[in-house]
Amino acid sequence: MLNVLIVALIQVQPVPLPVEPELTQEEIVVMGERLKRFKFETRRDHKTGAMMCRVTKSSGYPELDRLACDVALPCSESANSVAEFRTCYLPRMSTAAKAWTVARRTARLGSGK
Image (cartoon, rainbow, N blue to C red; front, side, top):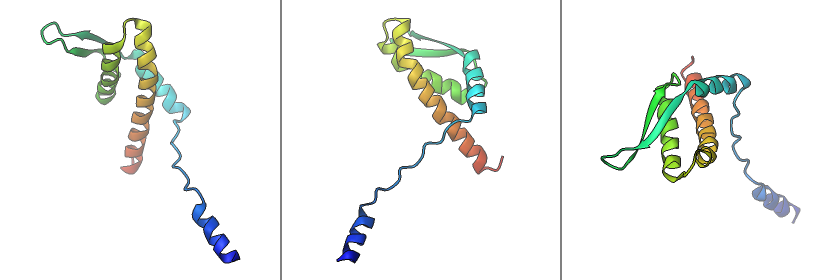
């Protein structure tokens, strides 16, 4: 009976969730500096009616620039003010930038650099 109970308890143990990698202090500072310099504008194309994003000052990483525009476009579509845009954009961009930085780190470590 005790063996059955031990086996049952072992089977019920929760599977540990993967730990989300954290950014180092240096990565946070570098990302902040990159994004502080970065500038873009979104507007509606008068011919097609589609929202467009144009980078006016690059972060220095083209993939990060594209990511920022990808995050900004849906926020531009739905926002009626700068405050609404920021409320939409900032948390999404923070999450996206963190994921981008972690992916870059993983790729860099995987390639031995």
